[in-house]
Length: 236
Length: 288
View 1 (cartoon, rainbow over the protein chains, first blue to last red):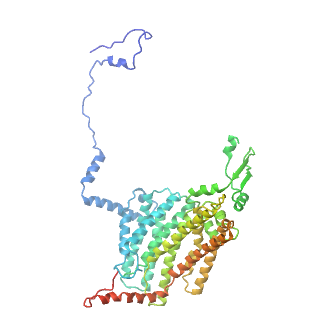
View 2: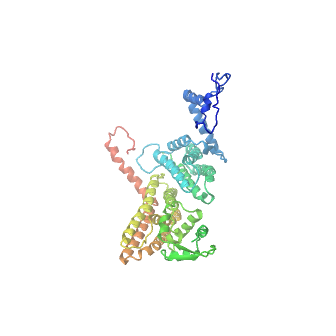
View 3: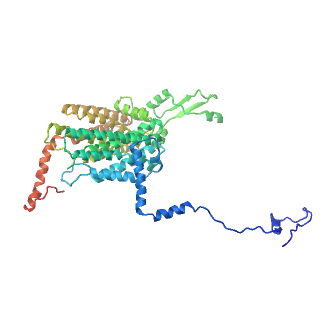
């Protein structure tokens, strides 16, 4: 082991040395053990999560997504000022609702006359392009909600109207008549009001106050059109 | 101007200056601002530059602005130019788009409601939701409200191309004028539910007058510098197209009576295929 040697001499006459050059000459007189085991007491969470979702059964995956969708349905049915719908948005719920609504609304058989109820594609296009248009409108008005969050809210708020459609179909089984029509009108009106209130509870906060009504009116028109389609549904 | 004066400059809208500008939009107005301590003159030059620059404002204003424009379209006045007074050279797309959407749906819905009411009176009429009318209404209204202003704007620019002055309105302003002028048809269409025929024609004529008057008063300042023949031809073409739209909507969406003659003819039309089929197999009448 070399001993530490400091070049004795006048610092002024010594030649300029690079920084830390003397470090290599310093020796340590005793051993400091620097060996051992390095273990991480807790395994990394993400790796565990990844492998578990990859290896989990299909049933678990579907049930997890269905539970998320069901939770959002509950938020729509009892609208409070929560932002669960906004925070973890998904478009599965709107897709399920739109497909259900379009299936129930379309004409049963292909009949000769061309004036009848809407076809599946017409309902689908109205729902999705209507939602996209309303989202673009609220973004142009300066709202601070993102595109997919808005689509998510508008899609989920169709739930009351889908329930109304199911009730109307059941009521229509009893046969047409004025009482029948009044019941259907009442149910559709109540569900329409529910949809509009639920969606404005989520969407209105994102707009500046002098433009709230400008953002809410297209939502009103959108649900009005869907309610109209439900109300005029006549089984063939 | 000193730097301090530049910091204190703010754009103030002066009422008398605004009214002056309405008459002569190309004037340069100088106003003294009382806020400036350095007694500098604030020169406000308003020309077409403000109008063209405001195109990037897609959705402008708030609900009072939109309501104000709707009221302006409902009550046209000979001196009031819709573009200068109400739009103030800041067109918005909210009004035209949603007024057209509302009008298309209201047309389809009330047309269907007249069918319901007619069926109440005469049970032989067959009721159907007639959903295809929504599509037809939507396409018609949107094409009218966007293609006709395009043609008008193009024509006006071609006519004034020979002159140096920038006269006509931008495309968005023309679309705005047409869109807001369609607003008066929305209550008219709802009133057309009343099944009294002469009343329907009266309401239609009233709405058409208001709407066309709004258009004519807006276009008059631009068109009056042209030759009398072109001016008269343009204005009458505008009014004629508007009347055509109104009458066409009335006839297409609100005539339940011909339907009872149409339904038997549909059944008659579907009989021949039945006859052609072998008579032993009873085929349903459902043919596409």
